[in-house]
Image (cartoon, rainbow, N blue to C red):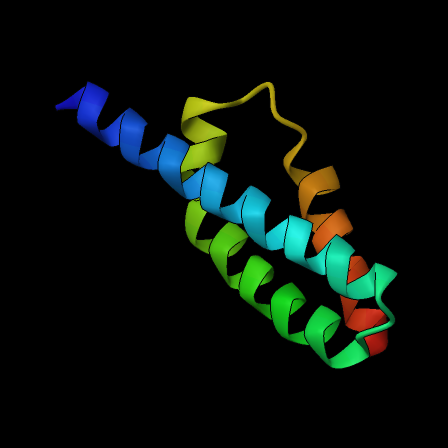
Amino acid sequence: MGTAHAKSLDQQVFQLQLVMDQIRLARSMGDHVGVCVESRRANNLVLDLLPALQQQRPGLNHAALQDRILLGFDQC
C-alpha cells in the first residue's frame, strides 16, 4: 500500500512540475493570463500535496517551491 501511495505522490509531483513548466512557457511568451491561470492551478496542486510532501519528502524545500509558484500571481 505504501508503494502505491508513493507512486501516486510521484505522479502528482510530476504533474506539478508540468504545470510549473507551463508557467515558464507562458511567461516566456508574454501570456500574462496563462501565467495567472497556471499559477493558480500550481498553487492548488501544491496545497493539496503539501502534507504528503512534508511527511514523505522532508528534504524538499517546500517554502521555496511555493514561493516560485506565488511569483506568478504578480501578473494576476
